[in-house]
Length: 311
Image (cartoon, rainbow, N blue to C red; front, side):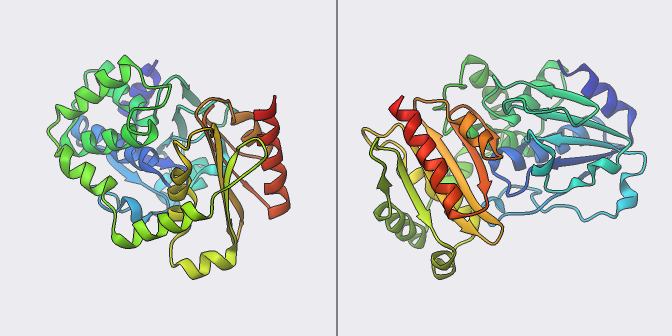
């Protein structure tokens, strides 16, 4: 599956790694992991990571992105990780590269690179990058191991989602064997400040329900300004406050921003991906996202989710 990826990594001296904007653990982990796999096995390569940053993942080794000029893309290979549509790219200059490769685990939407390796059966893009290394007998150092394990852990919801299988644990075992401090990683990912606990309590009290028990939270732009929290912490971070409520199989978190309303859709039973796609988003069957222009559109999405449960 990864033959063409390895062939092109060997061919190009400059490799630039991209992922989606507003990075989560899988996006950042696959980027950092791929970088250090390449450098560990091909030390003469020049490898850059590009894109926006997030405070949430600042504990990850080598998480500071490179700032490079357009000229760096001349004659380069761009590898796109963990996104299914071109408008999700954090840095769209991959189009300046001589060759483009995409490795992704989201439900296929379209082709937009020269070489596409897409497999939605993987729990994470980090899982795919790990499989790439294992299948090609490439060395994985501790920095790559920690980054890739972080993405596998977060994108599988601590190995709870349906896409977690025996392959997941075999690959995770290979990463643990690289020797990173697993306990320290868990502390960084899951320990909360008291302020964060207070924020989650506020959002728990904001939960509402549709007639068919779709749980939702709606946060206005004005509320955002008073919270003192970043968009990622509210949109992606607070959707989990609705997880595991008895009698709730679908939940969605709406967060107003300057650029529209971020929508994080989750389900324990239903395929909510087609609804996300309908509103310009995508993702997985039970975990998807979208950005809609206004509250009115967000409420239409909520009606569709309610109808999904009704049927």
